[in-house]
Length: 240
View 1 (cartoon, helix red, strand yellow):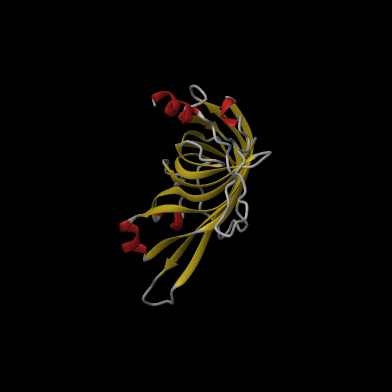
View 2: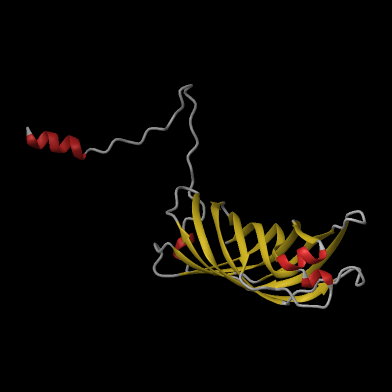
């Protein structure tokens, strides 16, 4: 009896097509870019719309003396750049080192409100518009691939250099900031594999580590203790 049972167990039945309840033939999922993880380096590019603002701390003593309050305004920005992913370890390693330099066009605004007992309240807007070159270095941790999708997390630091700073009205816009910055970055993303490329939408948060405020002899600068960068960015990554 054992031999016939063993023979039956070893028989291979032909795969039957997978059909829905209505009898229609279901599609078969094809693994796009099946050799993607076999390569150690992956280039690409990104587009990065986002929002930025200053995280500010105001001098309490100056508020009491001058009756001047400050409020940071969220403003849109946009960046473009290139991606270089290097796998750390073998082709099953979940760790990727990412270097993604780019250019960002950023505007940040601070509204100052002057309050007095003998005059009506007045609002003055200070605007800092900059073209910034970013040099982010990130460590990416990715899950196992499930068909044509994969989720990941990443974190790292991003040094930045402002190559141009624009102030449209020098008489009114007197707030000035340092050209160099470094921020802490972290985010989550989703890898979507297509036949010719990989597309990865990614949400990333950035918090400045440096006080960018330049001390100047005007009411706006002296009313503040610090200005730090704070951004939320949607990265649209395309790689092959």
